[in-house]
Amino acid sequence: MRRMSFLAILTVLLAVPVAQAACPDYLNVNKRPLTGGEAINLCETYRGQVMLVVNTASKCGFTRQFEGLEALYARYQDRGLVVMGFPSNDFGGQEPGTEEQILEFCRLTYGVQFPMFEKTHAAREQADPLYRGLAREAGEFPAWNFHKYLIDREGRVVGSFPSR
Image 1 (cartoon, one colour):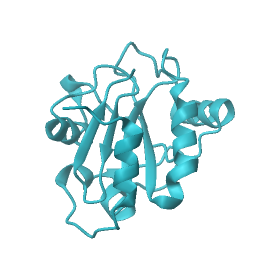
Image 2 (tube, helix red, strand yellow; image 1 turned 90 degrees about the vertical axis):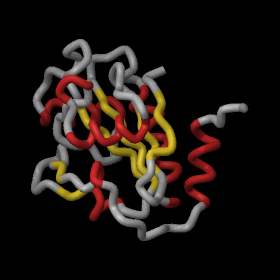
Image 3 (cartoon, rainbow, N blue to C red; image 1 turned 45 degrees about the vertical axis):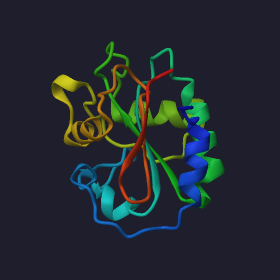
């Protein structure tokens, strides 16, 4: 069976009408935006959208992926895609900065406008509830920075994409 590309899967997901499905437990979490302020509930805020969840790092060989992620967000946000970045220092200590430094780097270097959230543990050993749930649904934890989980409008993980 031929495996569909990320863009092929995304195109199919964005064509599906918005659903009001129940929120899966792993998305029913509160996360504070990197820009500051109060934590938001991911379900309440993004229910019915196609979500791409990414663990990010500013000092990683894959950091240039911010460009592609921002381009995806800019191109498809009006059709219901939200890219969500979760900085993590779990892999190689490649996100050592403060949240303010991370936000400044992402905005100034890559023009990131998609939502970025508080530093979050993504590695199996100390994974945050969000990442434990994503890994359970996808069958794999991130092995490095810039692992991506694609979630459909009903909150189901439909793709897991390693860093490369």
